Image (cartoon, rainbow, N blue to C red):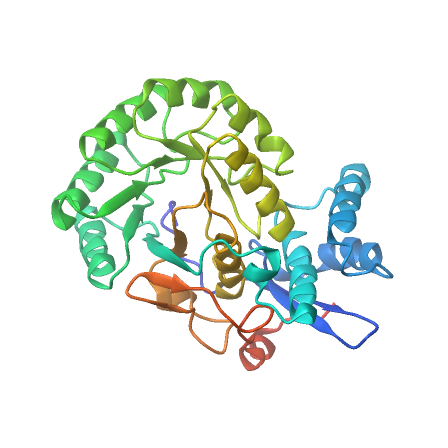
Length: 348
């Protein structure tokens, strides 16, 4: 992590929705630092809300939840997404279609890029970028330490030198610098031919982001941690607060929320770059969304891949840096229930 601490394992939820016809769908969910805490919040708010609903009424349920959450629940941004994913999977499976085709297929393959964690120095980033490139991935994104502007620029220079000029690179400093520093940082990345600069300032700082977007030539990307998509990003899209927006099926209100944000961005000729969901079952749902839209460039995965490769009985469907959309109904893969049961702390 940025503060130098290490996480001794990942906290996560697994949601399961059952229907009165005997069908069910399950999906991983983000849980921050407390699966127990997040699980009890989800059970207390979402279970009574969903009871008795028709699972095909995804839009009505999504809209009703928006109203209910505003009135009393006020759950974290990652709570509703897995429920919506389950609803879509129930529908896709009943229709006998892979989720991306059930939504409306746009593309059957998507290029993949790898994103770093926070590493110790420039050499570590350069070596990792080379490993990513040599593994066939199509781009590499740096999460720099953010300790100083000079160190971050040095890291980005070292990575560009290591991989050469023909490999795409991106940067995500996670709002580490001031506006003035972000301008200097963006100018440095322009000289190094980086593809985009992500979340250079806090996502909610619209005025500063709009000005940064105006003065920089490198595309500025953001909005992944804004709550209440797509409404919260409408101003960002309509007034070019950023050059591209971010969404995902975990933090953006599920498949429904991610699609709403992507479609809104598309109407303004803007990309919606899908954000990693961390957990591979959710990543697979994200891939299905990537297969159903045209205004997203890549499928993002955290590196090293093996650190996050759990939750499914098979690996994500990709080779040589290209992800291929599943053809089996629904998710197109099975959750690893032996692993899930072995990791379970509590069932609520």
